[in-house]
Length: 403
Ligand SMILES: [Zn+2]
Image (cartoon, rainbow, N blue to C red):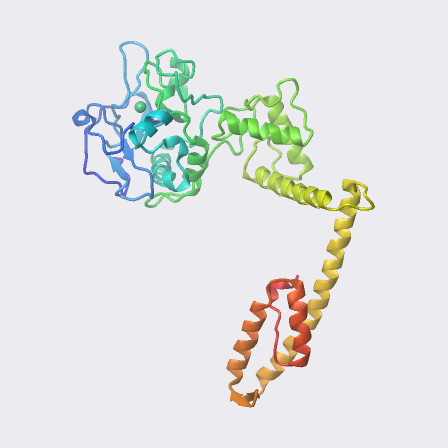
């Protein structure tokens, strides 16, 4: 028995015997808006999932995953499809933009993270239950149209299908002619499945080839061709050499080596050539720094001359140093005020404000309110501190502004 805890069992069907070990997850789209009947189970997947939260209302398990499902075509000869070691999921919606629009269906290519939560939970559970790695072969194409025929180029060979380990679509299955789930946001789905908690139990998942040399397949986890192209453009932006291939959307040796070089330059470990979250974070930080500096450069004109980036950087550094000094000063004054407040704390009994007796607790609460109101900026703080010199018990600069 292999039933996902928390999944609805209102539409149960029987399965056949797996003829290969389960190593694959096949994604479909229903091309409709409701729960399909699947001809009484004759064409049923293991799961049907509606976009949204990972709840019983959105997840139905039809067939025990210890048995095989029936949503694929299996022709005589060739390979086993349904029984060829896969778990099948139908996602409710349409992968065809025009069709979805015409019939008012959920367009699956546009699914955001919230829409994918239910599907991600199912993937996470299958990973836990069957050890299917939550990866895709980065070389797979996920075409959006004109792919509805048996010999379409995105389909796997018999051998590749039998050996595949990871997630793929109906569009890749040999002997079949459907092209769902189209250009599915597959990389995002895999990320969600790796980071999100399954409905019940389960552990955070390994989303890919961490620890593997990048020359092994799959070289990258869950990246589409478009995403690899975007990574390659980042590499080119850092003046890294991609040879005559350029940004071709394929994560080959040259791209792997360029990523390794970048990782070495940015002191990211391991320098494994895999463009993972750590590498992306470092790149994003540098990009935003550069954008900031560029913004400053364009807004500053000095003696009607364009200021060099180097000069601008030096000046920025000076500004930062001045800002630090100012913060140091604010901190010193704040400490002095804190001492006054502490001293006030040591007193007992009420104090007088504007000729009215108030509790010390009230006085401190008011001081805190004033401080928060003034936390908007250094100028505001300074003003507040100047006033605080006059009114001794006022103005305490919050710790988080310091340092
Ligand atoms: Zn399908």
